[in-house]
Image (cartoon, rainbow, N blue to C red):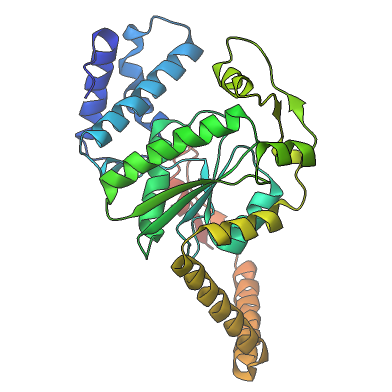
Length: 318
């Protein structure tokens, strides 16, 4: 684990104290708010920079604790990431699509494959890679898991995906070393030459400070392709992904799709279901109408700020 000094050491002391309470939160900012008022005297920079500094430190510190062996820290805290989505199906394939930018095609593909999406427009905060690893651990019934890149074909897209893949691999090995993890960059063509000849390109910057671009340029690859210009992305990607993952993963998805389709067909033609469904809708409408006809009274003193819990009991039947 890192050894923190000065202000950073004092801040990690507050984090340790919070962790000792056993409370859960939803995100890193919530942790900061638990002791924000107590650390004002430590602030030695503008508010916006202080915000970024403290939250980044909390993220780094939690990840250090995780890597140091506390592998359940994120699930105990109930930390979530805004980047990971579409993980609430009753059935999920052990696939996370990494998209550098949100696209409708990615959403369609995620629904078709019943898999998660991780969207990001920059480098990945450490704690978010753990969320991806936890998702893969939860869904890998056959001990196979995949992170699949749907990014621009350029140095930045390649670098961001590589960085996330390395973190997820490390995290998953700590959470469940029995799961085989594979990172697959999906490209729309067999080679650099084919890709840049098929789609509209842009010229990579030759700014010497941009080491990522320079590495490509040194290999004679001076052009990039934006994901936005690729047509029929969902169809192309679904075919490529199903060819790339393990047969048992495809089989499980196929069986689930078949059962789901069969259920829908049977329900659509089942007289008993249709009768019950119609009766249920009618009964819901009757109850709603009955409730709407009830007279109510708002019987409470208005508090400032409003007592969110108390407001539940402020309205009564007349």
